[in-house]
Length: 160
Image (cartoon, rainbow, N blue to C red; front, side):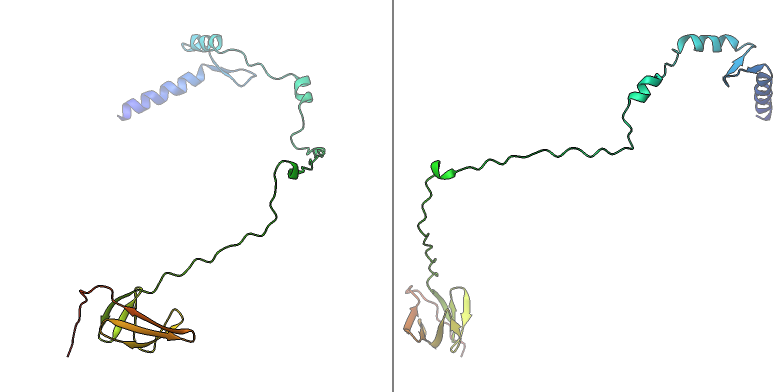
């Protein structure tokens, strides 16, 4: 392995000895590899640069030219001739609250519209006055309301 590395190193150094450096800093081989350089030069097309007049005609990318303001004309539209606008006030009706529904009575507590209440609690502006076996009495300043379980098959649970 050491012999191979030393042979390659000596070949590299000997190839540098046969090389001539041209003024364009290109390496031209005059020995065995000289024909390769000639073939590569024949294949590669010559580089054509940009002429000075083309460079001078380009806009300077570092100069900022403020664009001229554009006058904008906003047309005034008279939509009254296209649409008839009714100027009467719009009356919005209030959505009525759902009625109170008694679902279940257990241990002196009533399930009214999904929430549990006992005597003295307030329900939708009413106060719970009494809870019976099948009905609940609610009262406020306007009057008295009685909620009852509508089904005859109500469940009565005694915990005593």
